[in-house]
Image 1 (cartoon, rainbow, N blue to C red):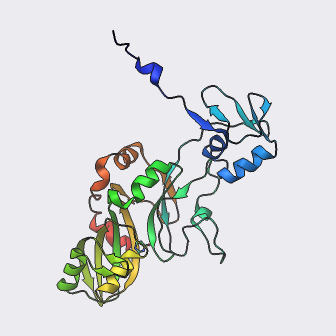
Image 2 (cartoon, rainbow, N blue to C red; image 1 turned 120 degrees about the vertical axis):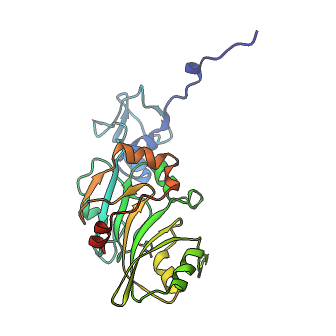
Image 3 (tube, rainbow, N blue to C red; image 1 turned 180 degrees about the horizontal axis):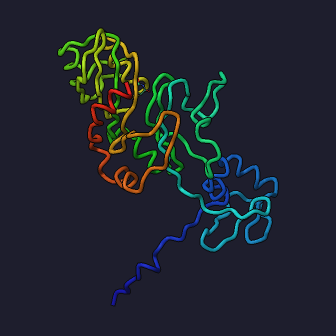
Length: 267
Ligand code: URA
């Protein structure tokens, strides 16, 4: 008779290499972890270990760095309203302010999911959940990102239709975009644009492709997550409902539109 293997007996143990355990705990990069191990600062169950590739079972083994226990990393998911003038990197060789200046004293290392140009403001997700980051940035998943755009000129219906169809960019045709004319005011058209790609300076280049330019660009939503009432330069944690929506299939639907009042305030 065939033996049945219980689910429990085949459950994978949470084995990771020592180097990975340390970096996953949000203490530093894998390279740094290797150097701590090499320098004899790491112990497993009280024993000094200098092998970065040692397999460690997080459920059973006690790992310490400089005699302090290393705990599994807490997952962090932040929603930051990036102001213009801030770059989306950790260190800027030109010394400009970075988004990390706005999120000091985090209990674990977080990285921005995708980028916003220095001159673009709006919603930026930062997390240490690399799987979610991959899901949100992988072009295959086509996660919608919504922007408010102040154009340098009045746009004709024909120009807007070209944006909707997709335009020729230096790195190939853009995918069709959802474009809503919010209003025309003086010499400017204000648009709400939703794109499902994240190419470099994409919205700006799309507007250039239809012979206009962007004067102001604000990202208001990523998938189902909206910027809402968040104040510029501040951040909050993603809610459980937002996280479930981002991790689930809901990323394929853009967020419901902001109220006209919110849109007016942001532009
Ligand atoms: N498109 C742009 O042109 N810039 C951004 O920062 C984001 C999208």
